[in-house]
Length: 167
Image 1 (tube, one colour):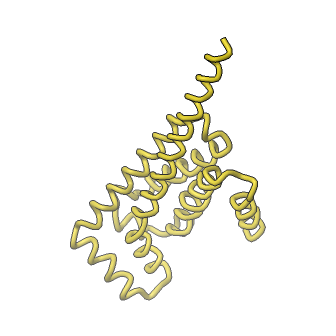
Image 2 (tube, helix red, strand yellow; image 1 turned 90 degrees about the horizontal axis):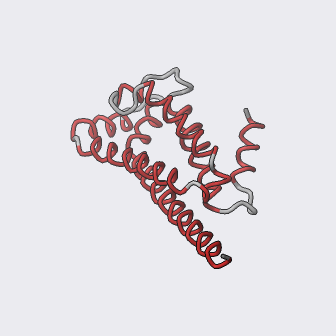
């Protein structure tokens, strides 16, 4: 595991790699894959799904892993798939909306805060912190994906203009 984490760290931190590419890898590998596996303790804890079963059922958590794989799989060609970046942006905005909806419910928000305050285990703290912050993280990555989409469309437009000038 330690060696795998070193490889992931080196891959994401390559200075020769464009920042957007590193962000795709970071979001896919660290946030979605390692993040969800940490929070649900490798699918051995139901704390996340009990807190918000509509959004974070066990099946939804598996889908989050797949989204992470999708982000990482296109990291090297993000400029060529601007429409896919739009889909990624929409998905992150949707989870940001879910987060705002969750936090706007006084009972749920109070439960999360109480969970952190009265925590007796690290799992309780991690779960509580996750529910207090995941929407901000998703919104940040929505901006990254929107910007990547913009750059991809811009590159495609520039490529089309160059091709038209040659004819």
